[in-house]
Length: 114
Length: 113
Image 1 (spheres, each protein chain N blue to C red):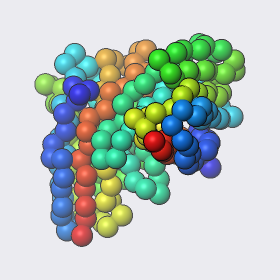
Image 2 (cartoon, rainbow over the protein chains, first blue to last red):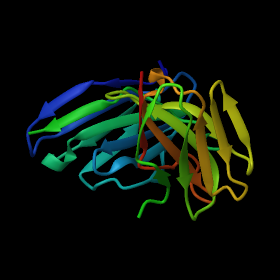
Image 3 (cartoon, each protein chain N blue to C red):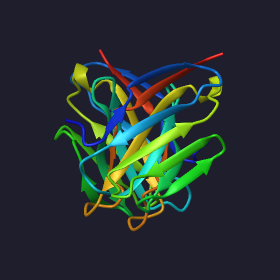
C-alpha cells in the first residue's frame, strides 16, 4: 500500500459526458501528479501540482483539467469524453518539488467510455 | 520516438535464469527510477539512482545508472515466478521541472516455474 488513495476504482460512462477522478496523496506529500496509461501510449504524464499550484504540464488535453485543494487532495476533471479517453488514470505523490524524484502511485481509476 | 527506450519489450524465461533489462536515452537525466507494475495496479517504486555510475542492489535485483546519466539497467539473478510483471524505467530530464517523469514503454517479464 503506497498510501495514495484514488476513487473511484472503476468508472463507466458514455461519450460526451464529464467525470471527476479524486486522489488523496500520502500524508505529508505536497506534490500530486496525474498520469494516463493506455495500451498504445504507455504511461503519460499529464499534470503536476505542488501545494495547490500548478507546476508542470504534460500531454494534457484542453478537455481535461485538474486542481489541488487546500487539504492537498486533487481532482482530475475529464469532459466531453471520447472513446479514446478510455484508459487507466493514476495519481502519484511525492514530498515536494526539490529532490522529489521519488513518486508513489495510487491504485488507479479505470475509465471506460462507451 | 520514445525519449526512454526500453529493451527488450517482452521477456519470457524459466525460473532460475538471469536477465537484464535496458533503458537507454540520448538525453541526460537528473535521476532515474525503476518501477514494477502488476495488471490493474499502480506502479511500485523499486529504486532511484541519482549519481552517474551508481550501482544499487535490492536482494536479487541490481540497478545501474550509466556514467553519463543517459542509460540504466536492471539485472535480476535467479528469476522467480514472483518477479513476473511490467518493469518500467522513468526519469526526470536534467534541467526540467522536478518530478515530471518520462516513462519508457516497459518490459513485460514472464517467469515460468
